[in-house]
Each structure stands twice: as C-alpha cells, then as structure tokens.
Length: 462
Length: 111
Image (tube, rainbow over all chains, first blue to last red; front, side, top):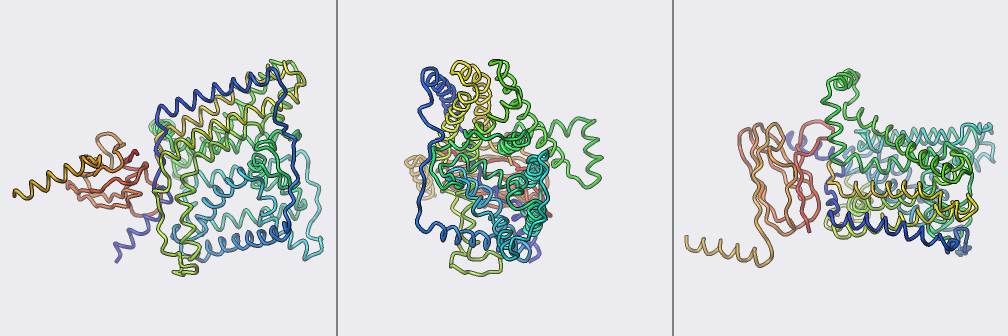
C-alpha cells in the first residue's frame, strides 16, 4: 500500500508532459523557410506599384439580437468558473490531474482562451472575472468604490510589464505551478493586487495600464476579426495596424510578451539544455550557483530566470536596431516614434507560433477538462457522467501538426509584413520612403519567423 | 517444436504483410543515463522491444504508452509494445519526492 502511494505522487508531479510533437522534418522546414522569403518579396513587389488593397480601417458593424443577455450570462459563467477554480485549488484534492484549477489555468485559460482571443477578438474585455466582480461591487456601493487617485502618466504600463514578467516566470520557471493550492494562492494574490489597483485608480485606468492580462489578451485580440469594443467586424490583423499612440512601456510589454512565447519553445530545445549544462560545468559560475543554491534556490531555476530576463532584452535590442535602421534609411522620424508605431505589426508572427506550438497541447491536455468537469475537486463526484473519460493522445496527428504549423507560421509572417508596409505608408507618407523603411523591418521579421520555424524543427526535450 | 517454428514464421509473414517490423533496442543505463544515443526512432505499427539494463535500481516510465518497469541493480527488464501512437515520448525516471526530472531518453514514433 505504501509503495503504491509512493508511486502515485511522483507520477502526478510530471505534469502534462505525456506526449510531445515530432520535430518538423528537414524538407518541410526548408520549404517553410523558402516560402517565407519568396512571399516576403512578393508583398514588397505588391507595394511598389499600388496602395494596399486591404483597407485596415474598414469596419462592418455587427448587430446581434439579445447580445446584452448573452454577454450577461457569459459574464456570470466566467465568474462562476473563476470561483470554482479557486475553491478547487484551496479545498480540492492536491493531485494536479484530479484538481480542475491546474488544467483550467494553464491549458483552458492561458492556451485556450488566448487562442479564442487571437482567432475571434479581445473576449477578455467583456468576460474578465476580476473586472466583472469589481464592477458588481461598484454597482452595489453606487460607484463610491474608488479612491480616484490620479494614475501617474509617467508610469505608463510599467505595472503590467512587471506583473506579466512575474506571470511568465511562474509559467516557465516555477516548479510548483502544478500544485493546486500554490496556484490558487498565486491567483488570489494577483486578484487582490488587481482589485487594489482598480480601487486606487479606478477600474478602467487599472485595466488599461496595470492589469497584465487585459493588455496581453487585448494585444492578441487585435489580431482577431471582431472588434469587441465597437462590436464590428474587421480584416484579421487589421486591429494591429490602428494608428494608436502607445508609450515606450507598451513597446516593452509587447516585446516581453513575444519573447516569452518564443522562450517557452526555446526552453525545450537541446540548445538550451546544452547551454545550461555548459554554465553548470564552468567552475566560476558553478561556484556562484552553488552559493545561491545554499539559500534554497534551485540551480536550474536560476539559469532559466537569467535566460528569461536575457531573452526579452535581446528582442528589445534587435527591435531597437531595426527601428534605428528605419530612421537611418528614411532620414525621417525618431527611433522611439518608429519603435512605438511598428511594434504591433510583429504580433501575427507570435500568434502563428503560439498556435503551432500549443495546438497539440490544447487538444490532448485540454481533454482533461472533460473528466474534471464532472469532478472538479477530485472528491470522486460524477456530476455529468464523464468522470471516467480517458485522454485520447492519438487525436493530435503528426501530419496535422507539421503542415498546420508551417502553414500558420508562413501565413502569420505574410500578415505581419503586409501590416508593417501599411503602417509604413501611413507613417512615412511617400511610397518610396515606405519601401526603404521596410528593408530593415523585413530582415527582422524574416529572422523572427526563421527562429520560430527553427524551434518547431527541434526535438523537444523536457 | 515444428508448430512453434511455423507460428514464428507466420508472425514474421504477418508482420511484413502489414508493414510491421520488430525493433529491438538494448539500452544500458549508467547512473540513469543511456550509454548510446538519447533518441530511439521507430515507425508507427512497429513492434518495439526495449531491453533495459542498469547499474543501479531504477524505476522507469514511458509516457504516452504508460508503461512502467523497475530495473534491479545489474539486472535487466523488458518493455514490449506495438507503437501505434505517433509522437515523441519521454522515458523518465521515477524518484521519490516532487520536482521535475530530465528524461532518460526519448522514443520517437514516426508516422
């Protein structure tokens, strides 16, 4: 009996690493890379003669009867799911496979909901349970629930940058992220922080500048064809070409988000493992790491944390260089203005990579939600009769992943290059300057897409 | 005896008829690390036999196929199965206590 128990615990500690995708075969990787370069030039050629054929400002107003009721019901469901996840985390069984919070947070929400936002639009704006709950409290107190402090403009979106970094660290480095009660505590701490921010500066002010996920899903949602603020349809990706003036901190936020999406894949490549081993075998660094590990910090965690800081800084440096080159090529504008104007056009490449990287996880690990819906707390309930459902790993065919991933990455790249040209025409006025400015941007985007393809072609080590 | 040879021949015939091959790997672990390569490649439908040998006692788990075996010190054990599920699967060591452990090796089942 004891032996059995000893078996059960470590089996659970392995998280969701049951099946990995096969790396892209070489020929497919080469095809994808070739298509990326050929199509990049095709788009440039398209812009040499004509103005963009797609109007990124075009909107088609949506009229859905009963939308208010549907949204109200969806908000109630969102709040209910948030509360069930928290309760399960605190009071449910602590086996990550039997407690709904782990699958809900890491698979259904962070992967599934992000997919929905990228493919539909910013659904977090109407459904964010933190905002909904605060809104209800505001209504109950007749709007007296804010200290109405002035949000310092110089703070930009820096609070969201810091909070998103903490979140990325939890997702990618934190070892106990699959332990239900720790995860629940973290969600609660974040929620209290968000409510404190809304209380201090007002709901909208904090949601726009401090609530990391409103920014993150807002950025992904700009890719989607539905504008949830205005209730209108637009071309996919058009939301990323809007002429919005963003502060420098927003550029940092976008690049941090893009870098962590890529870093997630990079962590699982043999190159990262080789680098980590190299660091650990260098005597000076090994001594330093050993010193740190005496304080109870784990060596792997230190290396991953340093890499998690370095990766976004590298992205920022590469983007800054491209922005500087754009200014140098055209002799117009300033580096910071160019950086702020173009940063969102990189998002489609990240969206495509995110979809490719996580699709299999969503359709395999996502199935855990079926048995968990019947027994969210791991108490042995069977509410919907689905508690005995076994995950079907064969659902993620390697062919679907291979062809789907390459197609998505190439399409994402094409949309990004197109948007960047549309923005360049707007920012630089003349067609000649726009084309000139896009030489460095195109180089950056090709490099970024190649990095995505390269990671997808690496055998996953976990 | 004759009957046995006949059955074996039939099995080989059946295997080749369905494009099925038998792939046997001898894996020697020294302190939980394989002496050869870290990735085993097979084709979907292959009959796979993994013959484990270890210098110390080690509990192994092949994910996805959910096969477990405990190799005694200086002993051998065998895992055998039909590779009908494509993908890349880690074989990891089960140790006591929480934490993430690097995979011992990977099995790639190509379509």
